[in-house]
Length: 326
Image 1 (cartoon, rainbow, N blue to C red):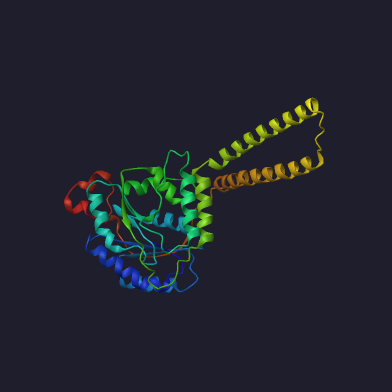
Image 2: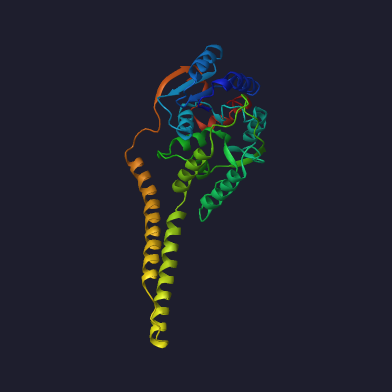
């Protein structure tokens, strides 16, 4: 559960989740990843660790972003089943029993899909729909629309995600890329526990969408090639038209305005193309430096002990009791 400035929510959300977990399994842990919060999230989480031995608190050295925070949490998990949730209370814990039941029935991934986006503006909804159409266009791996991070995953799925080496992580794309037997359930986000609006606004969504587009699609590069082909065709046709007008109709086409407009237009196309290429190159530069995705400055709490975590995938279905473990 990644948390950024969620001090006002953790005191209510953590006990609610743990009480639901207690009805599902006797071996549970809840990992809260503090992504460089600037409020008193640290003090609240430390106090909760003293009350709940199942709680693990990971404090990152700074704000790395939600995707690295999710990665840090996945790396720290020990359970046979891992559930990812937000710390603001918008993901209903009432769905956890249904998710676990579908896992027992053979699903490796159970992900929640939003029924509606009533809490977002028309512009955000339109941009979201456009993003999924673009990122899935011509892509063999289809990312489910309106599916977020709220999901349950089998241990083998978590291990597959943890094996991904990239630093520019777009988790929704990685969920889809690893595959496995997946099933969806509908849900409607609850209001935030503290009554405020989400801190992940349009700017953050646009940044994440850009990362997702460049990490899982070469559609922008193909679009540039198509634009170049179209412009070359138009230029060739225009050149032919000028020659025909001159020789057949003895019409000299004035060229000053055409040259100026053409230069400005093609200069804009070239700068746009260079900008798109620079985005890809910049991400390549980030990857080749091999810096860690995140750094942990503090860890508190017990969580699952190594003895509670199974080491062999075949043990998952050894007994009904073991199969129900988290």
